[in-house]
Image (cartoon, rainbow, N blue to C red; front, side, top):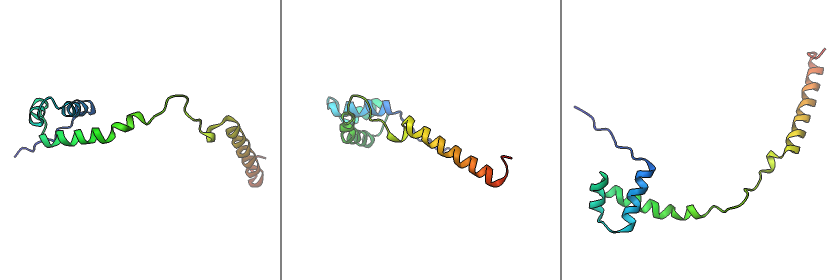
Length: 97
């Protein structure tokens, strides 16, 4: 017995199929036959594209807000604090002698 492997489609392929379905020029069955997918899959990809289409326009242009946890001043102060702790630990354990 030979097992059938599942077909995996790229996101570009899925987008093409979904856009074709949204255009509505061809029937779902015609699209499915053209792209070698099941008609149910065409409908699912169409719904998914419609649901997530607004996310494309959610991002705003301009400079991205800087994360305050990565500011150089904070990082340098953290390095200084860690060096002091290391020196203190070396002194207490007798390693630094």
